[in-house]
Length: 69
Image (cartoon, rainbow, N blue to C red; front, side, top):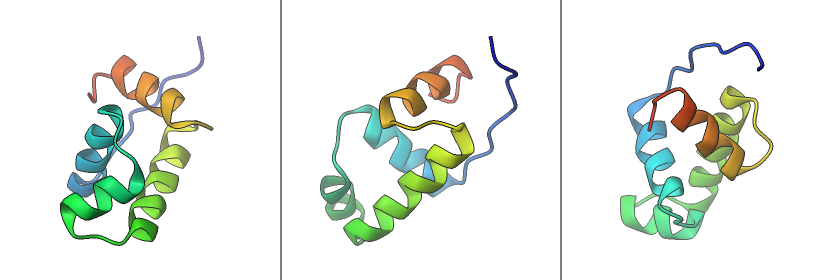
């Protein structure tokens, strides 16, 4: 298994991550929190980078493994 480093998320990132885990799209998340879809996409990209993931599914899997979700 790859080296596990602790991932640190902001409150907003964690909120968006939870919504992604529920299967919500960026436009749905944006509408729910009064953000632009581009802002949500930016947060998603930041989190993908933090988790060293290429897909949202991989990011969620890693978040579950690290007990972030």
